[in-house]
Length: 191
Image (tube, rainbow, N blue to C red; front, side):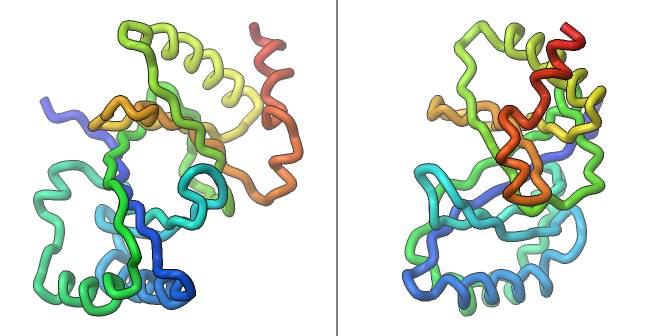
């Protein structure tokens, strides 16, 4: 039986130096023309920290693999990308597919955060059950506190430390001044 789920397709891109604004504008125009509605709705995020600082991530979501089979792949779509975006790209990085883990997440999907903190994990073979047990507790703490918290599973894990993604949304930079997001006290109150 086919299971209902949400997936995110992400593609890393590094624009040419000095072309960042033109790249952002071109991707925004492309998304407006071809990616306005789910399941092909897309946006562009900028990476602020880590190894890929300065890169962008083009994100299409929520979708499924079945949706990808039906993706509008018209000549106009390809031509628009090739003419307006590709000339501004210095390098294309990896493309990944991440499945939202509803069982371990507390996310309403109502908010569109300004910032997100994303932690990446590679779970040791045979230890997923331990990770799952811990995340079930973390989820309960977030539910009690009323905070959003998401887990995504990489659908094509390559042993590169990117098997699981934990995502915390933030309204602003000041949220990052609160150590552990303030969840520690709620977690300890429960456990």
